Structures are given as structure tokens and as C-alpha cells.
Image 1 (cartoon, rainbow, N blue to C red):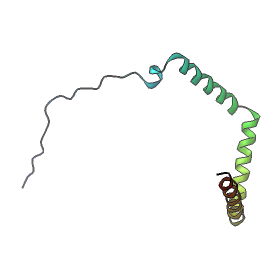
Image 2: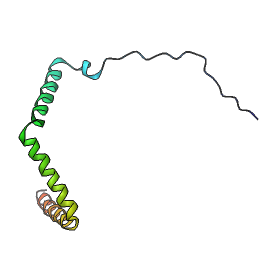
Image 3: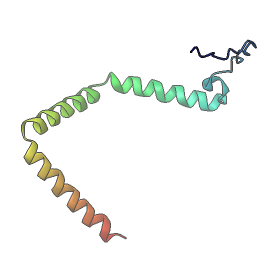
Image 4: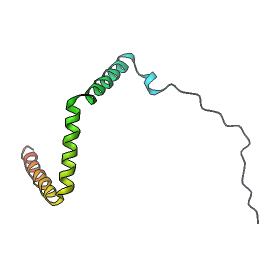
Length: 89
């Protein structure tokens, strides 16, 4: 027993190319975005960014080497932070 698959012979309309989201933004917003992008690129090339990456790597290694200690440090910090934030309400 063969099944017939319906075929749509009508041509489908191709969607018109819409302008990109960047082109739809007003000029001042585009300038702010470009300035932020340039500032971030400068930051990525700075010594501070390298220090942050080194600190991240050290933290990752410490957590990998000492998972139980890290868990209890995080638990304690979360508890203290929870009490501080709860008291302010």
C-alpha cells in the first residue's frame, strides 16, 4: 500500500531582505554601541584583563584541588550574605 504525499506546487514567496537590527537603530545609539565595543576591546588588551584571567584560573584550580573546602566556603559566604540581606528587609 503506497501513501501519497501532498505536494504544494505553488511557489513560495521569498521573504524580502529586512535591514539588520544594527541599521534600524538611531545614530546616537549606534555610536554608543561602537564606543562601548571599542572600550571593551581596549580593556581586553590591558594588563588588568590579564590579571582577571589569571585570578579566574587560580580560583578554578583551587576549586578543582579542594572541592570540599570550596563548598563549605561558598556555603558560609551564602549564609552570611543571606543573613545580611534578610536583616535589611
